[in-house]
Image 1 (cartoon, rainbow, N blue to C red):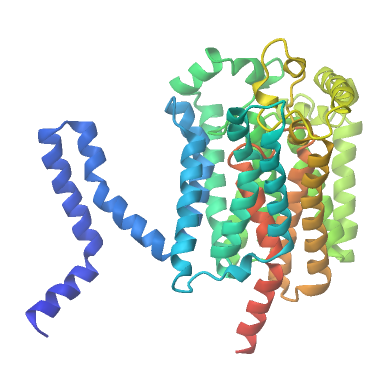
Image 2 (image 1 turned 180 degrees about the horizontal axis):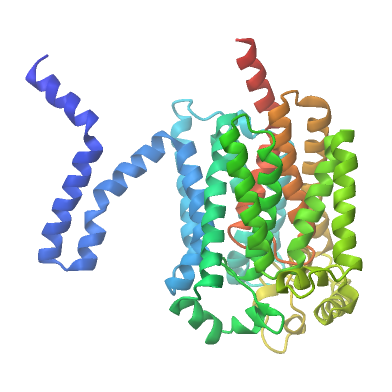
Length: 479
């Protein structure tokens, strides 16, 4: 081998090591000349450029990375005031779209993977929300701020999932990364509970108003690095459902025990969040799965277990001295709860008001009502009410239709199309978790907050790819 070929081979094998060494050299040089902060920014540019190139070559890894960013981004805004979380998320999604267009030139992206009823429905939803920019009750600035979480993410995350995560191994990777992020979220909540809040969290609680909803008479509500305890609790509820069910369909015993552990810890995280509506996620999710299983060995014991849990919370006072159990029990006795009655009263007032606004008050208006406006005194603190107020009864019907079509498609595929037992179990787990989150959207903002929106939307995309995954597994077995 010539010296030139030997050098080129060495550069290819050790390029990442050379980049790190080069970055350290730049960091040392810049810190001596420019200072610490400019040096840190400039020194990471070579590694950042390398990572960007690698993501361009492997857009599936880029999408998984964006999913991880969406999970952590809102927590960072608490520590970095003024961090433009929405702009950063938009930038990441636009980068992925650019990658898809770039890789399409060499046929690396198969656009046919995105041809499914889900993409069509979310595309119609996005078009409807775009047309609402002409609603005279809103402003273009408010519309631009609100359309992102309401429609853009619901369209882009499933589209990119269908384009880049179109193989079964990507579904398994998604679940594993999600499990790691769930453990990280639970760990942060445990630190808050058993060690205490840090200085930034105490400032958020005591100065910016978080105390009013998180340090209440029934006890402290822990929120991890989520925007609030409600978002954290619902997310942990969905994680518990998905990973507990999926654990029983893992081939490796290590994954069975690992996902069982994740599910148990997520359930504990849901309990210490103090979010009553979060109990709907596992209650509805497991009921959905029991019916979906179509197996007597699951239907009978599962149904009995769900009934016993219902009786335990609804008709007994066992464990009532425990703060978490007492708060969860209140979710089964909502007619006695003052906050629930206030919410029902507000919704009655909204129903009268919305009768004259079939297309809503405008995207972005519900959260930006000025003092004195009628909506200012009627909080849209649930996802379904939020969609109803901003897009009207027409928009709410379309939004709900997207979920119902997803459930119908998933139910049909699990019962009649998917033959692989393990895949059928994983798709059932995702369906159950999504169903639970949808019901919880009646009591909380389950979709408009990161990371819950992207999690649900990507899961829905995987549900529609169940047939493709089954064919892939069948072909592998036949080969």
